Amino acid sequence: MSTDHRDQAVPLDLILGPQLAAAVIHTIATTLQHDDHLPENTALRLACERATDGDPLVLAAPGQVWELRAGVDPDDVPARRLAVHLRLPAPPRVYVSDPDDPAGEIDELLLEVLDLYTLASWDTRLLAPHPVVG
Image 1: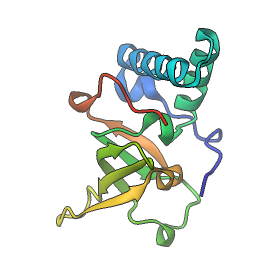
Image 2: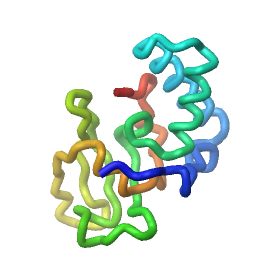
Image 3: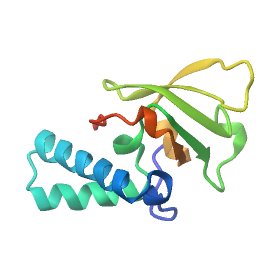
């Protein structure tokens, strides 16, 4: 279900502001450096690439809303928009709801489902100090 994110860069600086976007990318880089035993420069480059590519593996976190990517059939996904409530690491999955559905039903999905979406907003009050990568 993986897709190439390079055609739709995620404007983290517009979503979070430049300081928070830099902090998120730095945290992702630190996590990649530690978990994957990468040199600092390599981890930072990968963090920048993966974050701006909209890779849910490094970005998905509570407080976010993801919108369906252009060209994805709405019949193939649970909703046009997904609000992330919780992220679990192994296997990578998220608890989400449709923010446009008044019932507010929460579903558990594999993280890879977010490959069909793009990050649209992030409630900075819920911004985790250490996003989960992996």
